Image 1 (cartoon, rainbow, N blue to C red):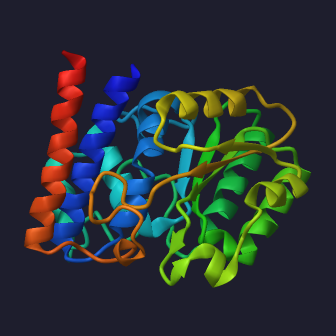
Image 2 (cartoon, helix red, strand yellow):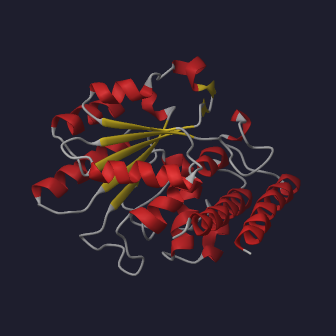
Length: 281
């Protein structure tokens, strides 16, 4: 896909995030929006997947370690064809398969249930190890929050991945700088993130703009070409990206827009969509 096509898909994914969280009257829009571009690249460009065969044993795997940003993953899966986009408003409703955190038993396309911070990367490392043992060519991707990496389990898993040279593993850190209690450096600073992963024998890529598809493309190409080490992509992103009043605001880590805010958010995203259409013309 061209960068313009990817931008248009990412904008639709952002709309789905806002629609789902608004309908649920709960959820986590900020970190879902900051990761929308990397979700887009993974599912529409990078990963070997087939929505018609979501359990293909040779498929690439994705684990959403920061499981609270399920609205972002759901919107991506829906736009990729795993289930209808029309189901996004059922987010967090009783009896719905789009639960507050991803559930592999209920939701098509979810490779691992997640929610408790730090556990997703451990599951991803296990999948990558299994791929090596079974001599499979699939790759494993996992997305972590920068607040999440304050969890000790993240570094236990990283130590193991580095020690086992799991070069089929890509750990992505969504470094938007904000967690539920405030700026990460004030809550419990995980910096320098890159040096920590290097210490655990990771190849580290610093992606200074998580919303630039040229840079995203280059980062994943470099990860794919790296042999003998797992890769960590530390991507600098903007929390709430695309919605004017959510951008860079910790207030939107974990709450839903009311009806008035919903209209403003959708207007923001529609304007972005219109600008992309003009760019195409």
